[in-house]
Length: 407
Image (tube, rainbow, N blue to C red):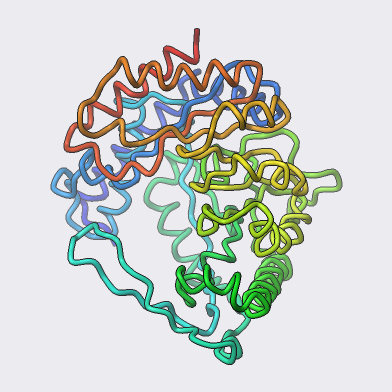
């Protein structure tokens, strides 16, 4: 599958990852995360996700492998090394390589349509395919199928490539997150969904009820086909944070069959950021509550401002991690949440562009740390679409954040 030069390079990179993973700091970070997720923090945690900026930090032309499959693996390994060399947040670099089970999803019966942007990284527009209530009949419940043969081939290839260097693990579905309104807005259009809340609420409720039934069916199929995998490790959870915890799996756990109660799960409704708490609860949380209920620990939110909706969020079952967006009022959120939930704060990524003012950044971060003192806080830098070709800004941002949280 891989040429001799590509294979040699990938194994060299994997060897360096393994060496970094053995450093004592990695085990220390795991313990910090476990304390943090158990609401017994030693200090605020820091996570940095370059996301769209990876194309500037590790451009394609910096890759050395020739084959496309080898380049994808090289990119993943180099990103881990980049964290160790340049970012140094609380990301844990594990001595592992995850092979994901090949799982196919039939979808919801309709395909979203978009009007593309004229700019390479510009915003697209919705092109609705659900135009009237009768179109809801075109929706279908998603069906799951597992391709064991393709999975075993991928597992064998990874083990042969560097199974003697990294711990090659097979995982099924380990990130569970519910996005009912996102699914529907891509089919109905965001503007029309807003109008429907007033003009046709029955249609919107029918759509949400169908999507809830579909998500329940997806989870049940994962259970029936034994496709769930534990996420009480470094698995990304909700819209920020990782899953390390000793609280999961739940009592009665059978290692051969993971249950929802053994896992983290989350939900979010960014599309309803500007609607009232009452409407948010009526058209989203009513359905999300039932979807989250079977899971052991849960999280909520992403980029939507939940300042005035926290009472409803905190009442969701098994709630542990709540996203506090850059647009939220951190003072009011901190006063409501106290130390009963993880305050998963998303600082504004715009500080990475334009005038990189360290004094302004320091004051901005310090304010949130001050008002959340005594709480359980994580600083999660994400939605970082560009750093204007200045990757050192990620390093400096992290250094400032680490200095402040470690005081």
